[in-house]
Image (cartoon, rainbow, N blue to C red):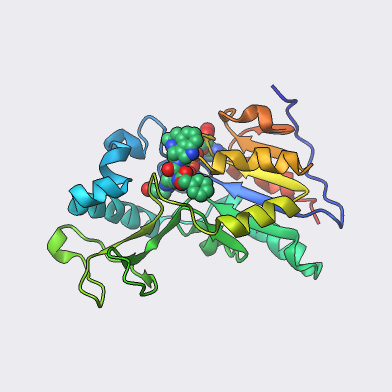
Length: 249
Ligand code: BV8
C-alpha cells in the first residue's frame, strides 16, 4: 500500500494537473454513491436502469430512476471539495498558462458547475440534459423535467422519445480523444472519490503513470486500482481537499 501523505500538494510552474472525480466527491452533498450499501445500485440492478437494453425494455422505469436523481441533485449544493477544485482552477488559470488544470468527472450531477468549475468534461454524461433516443442528429437539449410516467416524457422534434444524455454500460464515454490528450500532457493526476471499478475511467491513472505523472488518490478507503497511485490520502474529500490544495499555485 503506497505511503499516506498529509503534506499540501506542491506544484511547480511547469506542472499540469488532471483531476478525475467520482460519486464520492458528491457524497458529502447528500447524493448517494453507486456501491455504498444504500447506494444507487441498492435500489436497482445496473442492467434494469443503466444499459441500452434496459431503455429498450422499460423506458418508463429508466426515466423514473433518472427523474429521482434529478430531484435529488436539484436540491444539492457543492461541498468543500467541489469548491477547493474550482478555487484551484481559477488560481492556476490566473497564471495565464491556459491548460494547467483539467477536470474530468464520472458524475452526471452539476455540482462542479455550481461550485464554479469551467474547464470540465462529464465523461459519463449529464443529468439535466436529454437527447433524441432515435439519434436523429439533433443536438442534446437542457432538460430538468421529472417524468413520472412514459406519457409525460417529452419528445424530440422528430417525434422520438427523449432519453437521458448519459453514458450507459456498453456505450462509449464522451470526449475520449480529448481526455486521452489531456492525460498525456498531465504531470500530476488527482483522483477523488471513485472505487476504480468502471472502465475506461479506472485505467486513467495507469495511463498517467505511463506518462510519468505523479498520481494521488483521495477517499475514505483505498480504491480497487490503489496500486497505480504514488500517493494515497485516506479521508473524506470535503475535509481533505481544501488543505491538500491550499498551497498549490
Ligand atoms: C465502454 C453514468 C467501450 C450512469 C456510468 C474492462 C474490464 C471489465 C469491464 C469493462 C472493461 N471495459 C469496459 C467494460 C464494461 C464497463 C465496465 O467497466 N463494467 C464494470 C462494471 C466492470 N464499462 C463500460 O461499459 C463503459 N463503456 O467501455 O465502452 C469503450 C472503451 C474505451 C474507449 C471507448 C469505448 C461505460 C461505463 C459508463 C457507465 N456509466 N455512469 C449513471 O450515472 O447513472 S458508470 C458509474 O459508475 C459512475 O459514473 C462511475 O463511473 C462508476 C463508478 O462509480 P464511482 O463514481 O466510482 O462510485 P462508487 O459508488 O463505485 O464508489 C464511490 C467511491 O467514493 C468509493 O470508493 C468510496 O470510498 C468513495 N467515497 C465515499 N464517500 C466519500 C468518498 N470519497 C471521497 N469523499 C467522500 N466523502
